[in-house]
Image 1 (cartoon, rainbow, N blue to C red):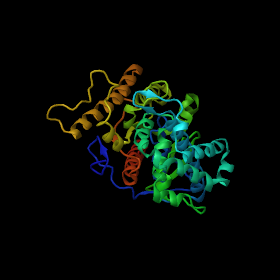
Image 2 (image 1 turned 30 degrees about the vertical axis):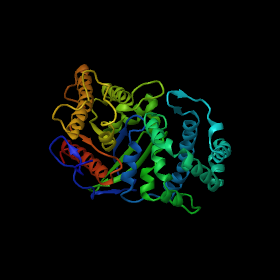
Image 3 (image 1 turned 180 degrees about the horizontal axis):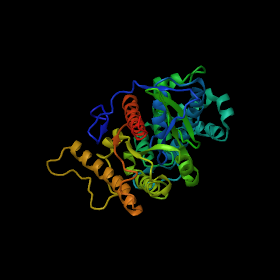
Image 4 (image 1 turned 90 degrees about the vertical axis):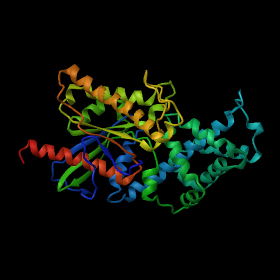
Length: 382
């Protein structure tokens, strides 16, 4: 983000993250902080940034190596589909294989075999698989389509995160590194790689000698009974919203930001959680700052994102972020009123962040943890 620090709307800054460290103690009764949000908002990236403070394990890096191969396969599948069905002027051409360079056609034929391989076989044939993928992605006859491909893919919520995060690995320097047989993912690789999580994941940390758990529910948000049960022991919920979802739609034409708001509304309306504090983390501010200049904010009636007279682009961005934060805060307030619990489950803080900024992300999470732990100690009379 532009200022280089977190924005906290209680007048306090997030501070540093020097007090956080991993904890392996099983004798304590750790407080649970649960990360929740729709797919692709950055929950796993936030968690990985916290793990990064003490380094990733060899097992974590092996998983990353496997997931990177799977993501490259997704990227090339989408690339082939785009290349063979792209739009030329106003004419849609369903099949342009006959017009492709012979080497591209040959590589597409070779790639079809890799689509059906399981993960183990893909790893065994990793070298030739990456070679074929790289040739398809970088072939000179297709380079003029890459910009349109990236723009089109950014609106496809189903695969956008995996595809767009993998493109950076295909640059010349990175590709040479990841294609080596002895490739070991760096910490930056671990954070940069996007994957869809489908299982609950927990990591224990310690802050000022107090143990806590950061829990990522992952894809279980699709199954309300599962994630609601896992929230009941949480001392606080960190609900993550992707600001950049304002222009992203799923295959059925539903906006991702509106889907996030519906999940948030469900969370706020639950009587099981009316005593649990909720903190809003508005993520991907950097992408929002870029894309609000490219795409209109059309999801709110009577809220135009057009640049006003005498308004700078940064002022416009700040105004549009205000529309989004107000939308979520009003949702929370309305559900509390409906339950007759106006004073419960209030959102004392909300933050703007970019989960790829390690210092900022760690600072925000530490601030959330420190505030909540202090509240618990005060409530206990300690």
